Image (tube, rainbow, N blue to C red; front, side, top):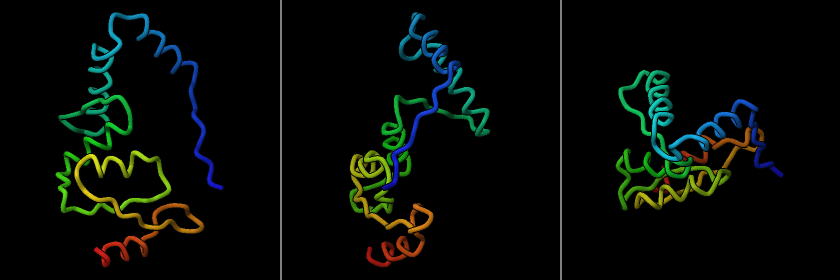
Length: 118
């Protein structure tokens, strides 16, 4: 069985969340702007948009990529459900490529099969 994973939450993470909870802002506010500025700097980008979770981030990615109802998007079946859901949310159709038996990552040959099939 492939385990889901384990979170790594440090004391600094907890302190940062408590600081926000005790502030005047639970959403938006200066911490979000600072986070977006950090992302822009890290990725050498002029733009960054913080969202509430990975599902929202994947959804926006699909919209930004312009996925359409006629599109088929290849993904892995061994992932969080949001990976396939964001494809559907954007109007496209997910197609699942298998994973490699030793790497547990998406298999290039299976991706090629998906491309040929579609």
